[in-house]
Structures are given as C-alpha cells and as structure tokens.
Length: 194
Image 1 (cartoon, rainbow, N blue to C red):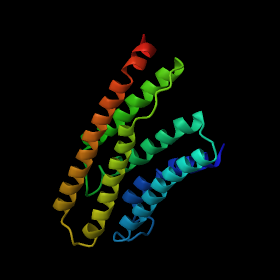
Image 2: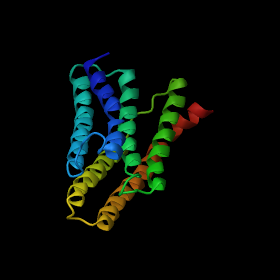
Image 3: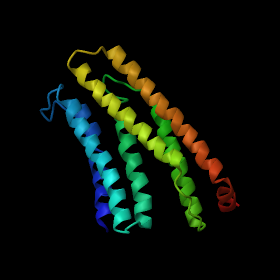
Image 4: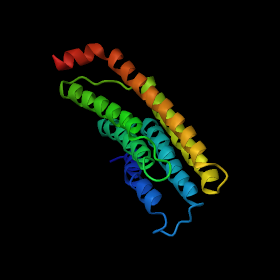
C-alpha cells in the first residue's frame, strides 16, 4: 500500500456519502440551502484526491498494477454514484442517460480485464481522460446550479433543463470515448479474444 493508494481509497469511501446526504439531509440536520455547499466540498475532495494520487504515484515512482486498477474504478464509483444520486429528488435526471456512463465503464473494465488475463495491457486513452473531465464539469455545474435553486433564485425547470443538457453532452462524449478506445485497441482486443 502506497500513499497514492490511500488517496484512491479515500474517494471510494467518500462516494456513498453523496446519495446519503442528498436524500437524507434533513435527518443529518443540514439546511437545504447548505446542502449544495456540502456536496461541492465532497466533490472537491474527491476530484483533488484524484489529482493528488496520480501526482504522488508518478513523483515517488509508485505507479503500480493495483493503482492502475483502483484509480479508474474509484473514478467510476465516485462519478456514477453522483449521477445516480441526481436521478432522485427534485432534479430527477433521466436514468437512461446515467446508464450510458455505467455501461461504458463496465464494458471498458471488462475488456481491460479480459486482455490482462491474456497478458495484454490496454493503455488509457486521452479521450478517456477527457471523458472524466467532462463528467466532472457536468457534476460541478449541477451543484453550482443547485445553489441558486435552493435559494429560490432559479426555477426547477431551468435547473433541470441545464443539468440534463450538461449530462447529455457528457454521455455523448462517453460513447465517443468508448468507440475511440475500442478502435485504437482493436488489434489487441482481437488477439485477446481469439
């Protein structure tokens, strides 16, 4: 276990807090107007730990096979937990859009595992990193919009429309990044599956 791994585990452990706090904020005594700030803080912790664990792993030469598996898994757990959380409550994101993220990550993870079992390591793609950035931007946008919404300065309709547009853009790019990943690794995939 390296220091970078602890930051990765931190993201995984924080992820369940999003749905719990979002859905049960009253039980925890959190005022509705404070909820977006609490969730923003958690998201900032997760996103900054994602940056920190990568920096630490590279600077200390602690890039490990465990880290290569855990880091994308932690990213998926964190972001998909948030998107699934927002299918509930007043925002009510369409589940069909969120499932695109889930299926995309599931397919890529399964493919990486199958190839790894055959001794073939599939490298991460720039499009995958961009997918993560676009998803993070969509999540930050939703939480930032939640601030004026909870204060009565933004209508629910506008909050939903902008949020759904942002998540839809992230979903379209998730599909594009999956196609790019499959195409770039088609020879390795063919070899691993033959």
